[in-house]
Every structure is written in structure tokens, then in C-alpha cells.
Length: 179
Length: 311
Image (cartoon, rainbow over all chains, first blue to last red; front, top):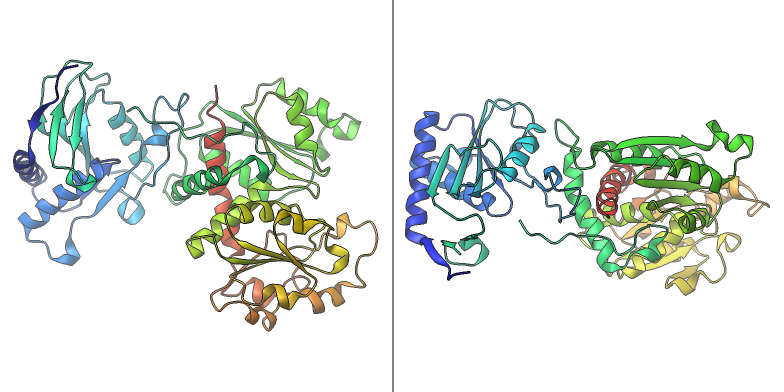
């Protein structure tokens, strides 16, 4: 494989997430009923960042910050017959998404299998008003009929290539690499 | 997503000896995530869809059988309950024949409770299907020990270094045996206490302290676990009367104060109210008896998840 190429640096990641926050605000005409839920691992970090951008845009006080949750999709994987990955906790604010507009956040959209698992997992928390998918990178090669509502970066990739997302929350410099 | 699978080292869970420290931590950590599922509006995940789990209960049980059934169902498995009384066991079929016939219907997991110590071990020699021991005679009850350790960790954030008193009918208690194995492995200081007639000789070899004085065991304890007097397993009279037992060995609002102020009180159930534990203590602020039951479902979900993934 060739050298890793930087397709997004820290500055452009910040700008891209900020732009995505604006798009979410515009499309939902405000923040009423919004809840941000990130897919572990890394989607939960991005969900926090997006929600923070929106809180800033809306001038939210400490007590009316947007609710943020984290989702572990392990138990919904379609290859669970073959593997037994570590199960991490899921945390949905208030324990339900009934009548909420869920912004589901993940780092990379690839085959769509993780997003499918996440949709099934979310349905266990009640009937939401809507679910919108927000991703940092859409790299193509879908295997299921799933698309992102918001993508900070669309990048052409070969199927065998690897997209690496580094985030400050993991003690790394914010960046997206293509290898 | 190339993630490493997490599995237990042994195919079966026959006793706490099958689990090393790392396995115990894996089960307890997984159970934390499993517990959340029971609080969802729709408390079921599809993980074990298409798996069949048979609960083979040759001996009566309320908690354990229901708990395993709920655990399997919340993970999406099909669970079938078999109880000794309503089966061909009454027509004279042997335990092994019964188990072989059930296995011929291709279950993915057998959960076995039997009044004879060693029955699950015996069956494990003949069956291919993974087996969980849900209590065998006076031998072991590993899933109870795991849910007890989960409950302790939930309340105390650790097991290591805690003083644990296990009190009562130690001789007939598979719960005591599994807990002594598990908790000493996790670094707790365990003391077992009971009347001399209910203390099995040699129990100290498992790494616990032994005393025939209730106060000595409870003094300074972080955890007090009371055991049921198992009258149905007594072959001879081992103490003068239930009343006398209760006076000398029952946990009550007075002697419980010997334990640390933040000590928790546990009991594996079913409780004999007013015998080994007074109602005030069983229903009091220190009691985590119903937490134990609730955590049992989560711990069994974790085990079913971890143990069904083998090819």
C-alpha cells in the first residue's frame, strides 16, 4: 500500500464540522427536539463537537444544552454470528428518542452496515420523529441502500484503501488520512 | 471493523475454576452494557436470533430459571424450559439419557440445574453443546457468584481488598463455595462463618478465613452475605431449633451494626424471613437483595453472549 495521504487537517475539520452544524440548524429550522447520538467509537466524540457548535450558534445556556448520547452497535452487527467483540455501553439521554429528531453521527460512512445496525439499535428506544445521518467522511462503496444527510467530506476511494480518522479526544491531532 | 473477539477461555462454565481473573472481569464488564438493555422501552436485541437455549432444571428454581429465560429472550434467543417434574425423569429416564435426547434437538446452549453435585461435569464429558452450571447440589453455582460480584462492584466500585463475610449453612451452600472461589481470586478477604455442624472441614484451603462466631465475621465487614438454612438438604438434625438458630446466627438490626457503616447486606434467596435474616434487615437500607436479582439477568446475558460465539 502507498503512503498515507492527509485528506483533512485540523483546521479544515473544524471548519467542516462548523459548516455541518449550520446545515443541521438550517434544515431543522432550529434545535427544537434535536438529540445528537454518536456511534462508538469516535462518532460519540463528533456528536459532542457538533452539539457544541450548535449550542454556541444558538447561544444556549448551560442548562439548555443539546442532549447528547452514545450508541454501541455491537449487538446489532450482521456478522455477530462470527465474532464476539467487546460490548460497550449505550447512553441515550432520558432513555428514549420518542418524538425526537435524532442526528446520528459517525466518523466514516463506508458499506452502510454500521449505519443500518445503528438504525435498528435506535428503534429500541422508541419511535423518533426523524433520524438524520451526519458523517465526517463519506468514502463511497455502499452495500446497503443508505445515504448521509450531512457529510463534511466526500472522498473517492478504492475499496481496499483505508480511511483513518484521528481525533484529539484520543490524544491525536485532528486529521483524516487516506491510505 | 477488524475488532478482536472477546471470549471466555473455556467452552463450559461448570464452576468458578473455569474462570480466571481476566474472564471474570470480561463477564462483569460486559454485564454493565447488558444491564442497560433492560431499561430500554423495547428491551430486546437481535444478537442471539436463531440460537436455542435449553434450561434443563432437574431441581426446583424460581430466580435462576426465570433469570436465564429472560436473559436469553432479551438477547433474541429462543429459550425452552425443561423441569424435572413434568418430564420423563418421573418415568425413570436417566439424567444422561434426558440430556442426550435434548441435545439431539440441536440446542446452542444447555443451562443445567441438578440436585446432584457434579451432574453438569458428568454431562459435559458426553455432550458437545456448551453447558452452564445453574447450581449442582452442594457443589457450585457460578452464575450466582458472578452476579454477587457484579453487585458488590456496582456498589463498592471494586472487589479487591474488601472484607466479605459469608454466614450460615456453609456445608450445603453451592453459593458459598462459588463465591469463595471467585472473590478470593478477585482479591477480597473472605470469612465464612456458621455453627460448627454447618462448616465443612477443609474449607479454609480455598483461601478464606473460618470462624464459628457470627460477630467475628461481621465485625468490620464491607459485605455481609447471609445464606439460607437449607433444611431440605439436612440428613440429620444439625442444630436444635430454627428459633435457636435465628437467635445465634440470624442477622438483625443490632448485630448488623458491627459491620462497616456503609456495608451492604446480600442474600442469594429464597430467604427464610426471621430465620437467617430479620425482615427489618432484609428490607432495610443496606439490603441489595433485589439488586442481586436484577443484576443476575445482566450477568447471564453477558455469559450467553460470550459463550455462544464459538464455531
